[in-house]
Amino acid sequence: MIDLSVLAVFIPTFFFVSLTPGMCMTLALTMGMALGVRRTLWMMLGELAGVALVAVATVVGIAAFMLQYPQAFQLFKYCGAAYLAYLGVQMWRSQGQMALAESPGQMSMAIPAQSLVSQGFVTAVANPKGWAFFVALLPPFISQSQPVLPQMVVLLSLILLMEFACMLIYASGGYSLSRLLQRAESVKLMNRIAGTLMMGVGVWLALS
View 1 (cartoon, helix red, strand yellow):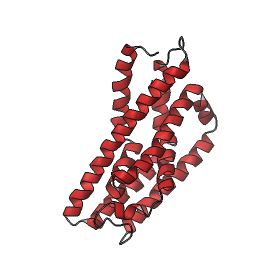
View 2: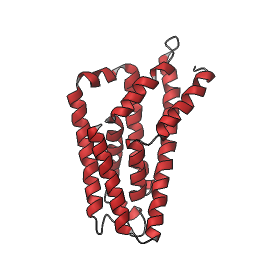
View 3: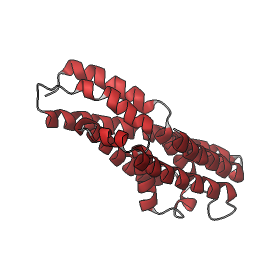
């Protein structure tokens, strides 16, 4: 199995990487603000699946395929960015069904759970920085002198646990901000902040 000294370096390294603001964490913050933490869990499910795919792909070498066929990667990335921008515009223009009236959950039903899952997945998989982090950081922690599968199971479990914890922190922060703005009766402002952030993540994804 993995040496404890390796884990002592691996855990703080990847926790810091996960906690650093990025597209996925900004998306968690935004959806926590707009939908509430409970509904944002659907996005987190998709994001964790995407992170797991990227991590495994890094180890088995699929990253080489992504580098060989950048057009396919770009198309996938632009589709995800366009959908995020669309959601952002809808939030900006909202006057009723997308607005936060009494609780974020009231607008959450406008976005199906499967759309939240798919958006989390696309954002994680189409994030070039995510690939770069895994390509640079994960392989050094894999010992070639030991079976790869058990090591990968342990490391991937830790990665997903840390990623989930960090997304909960961001989503909870967004939800707390939404409650603060609601008490100030700034519903329209709340929607415009969430919409702007959502569009920002879409542009970030498209240009990265």
